[in-house]
Image 1 (cartoon, rainbow, N blue to C red):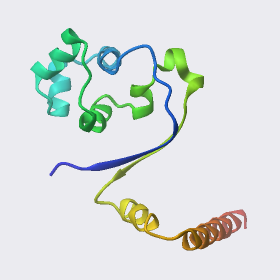
Image 2 (image 1 turned 135 degrees about the horizontal axis):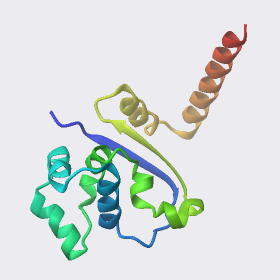
Image 3 (image 1 turned 90 degrees about the vertical axis):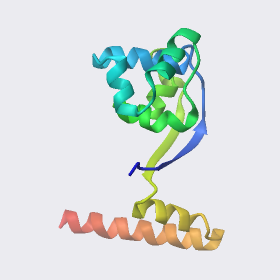
Length: 137
């Protein structure tokens, strides 16, 4: 069974100079893996991967998370040209398995009205403070 992930980006995106596929091939080289091994890890056909290289195209957005997993990197690192734009990113993101309690919690949180969200955040802060006091003792 393939895992499904949901990703939430907050902040602004500043694109780099390299296209995404160039960063993918750069990372493949850094890891010392072949395109065939990358294809096996991602389930993406070798011909599609070859097209990215020769036609200078980018992968489909729905492949981003599996690519990041195979390349042991984050979407931030893959989407940004960190060598040139490291200080230009103002992004927080969270990768959540859609089968997890975290995902359910996020989905339920987004259904709450502003008052209930505020109450929940206050409760969460109180829980964290209680936990921190317990560690100090």
